[in-house]
Image (cartoon, rainbow, N blue to C red; front, side, top):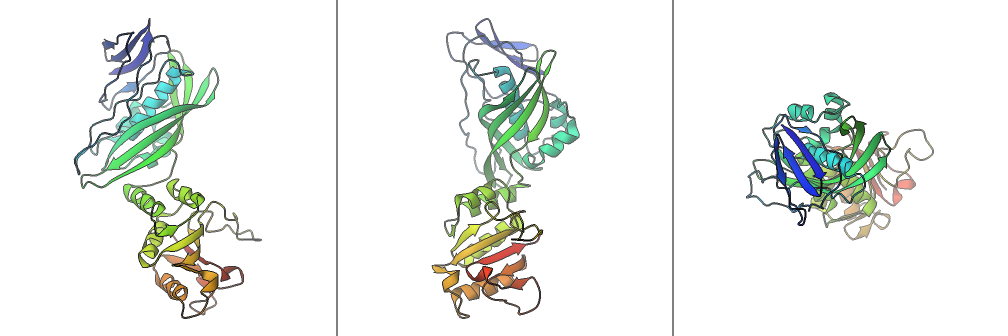
Length: 343
């Protein structure tokens, strides 16, 4: 099947296979959701004259546990800069983020005709693919990231909603950097430069959203963005959620904003790789004011030490009293609790 979008002689034309549907040039045109087979080839004609189509990106509700219907495809108006390039990128983003639980992902990637090949595309889109789950893509807007006569970068902001037969559902908005190259018949898909995040599975997405929005955890926006961009270890997120079940607390830093290396050393910090957190407040008490052995902060530090996922714990106390790096204290760690996890 061949799918193409063209603007010819003042008329919007959607071509599917050998059929064409013409729109009234005097009225906006709405493209309805189109189900593509695994062998669909995505090509966009380069003519850009004609009327301006409309865009439909509203969410479609579905009963809990059921796969929702497909979204209407985003149609790039001809008034945009290089609309044919943008339309191809939009369709690629839609295909990468729209599938059924039973779909063969290898076949879908093969059908996209990436110049870089299937294996590099599979690797780049790994975090968009959730085996055994359905996914619905909704394009919010495509922006040019760069443009020459031969090549183009289109950054497509896309909402991906992923769910399973159990009714579990999670949604994340990503920016996909899609690279195109000029071919004989128009723009062609070259490669996916970025999938806009590193969440590995539905559970990680769910935990990330829960922790980032947890009212019991005070944190800077930079830390919240670390979580939502996939920079924080899922193991650390689970520890953060467990700690919030014990007490409210305040975070100073996760990854962004912390020195890359342990200060004045050549050792990379656990923060840099998203495996550490610094906490300055437990409940209503600042760590610096709660350094008595019988304080609530001291008790929580002991609870953290006993947590099986905590690999390293710095605080006003050396909890185990041993000459090891798992629990330690020094002048720097009088005003906060530092904990790191191992993945």
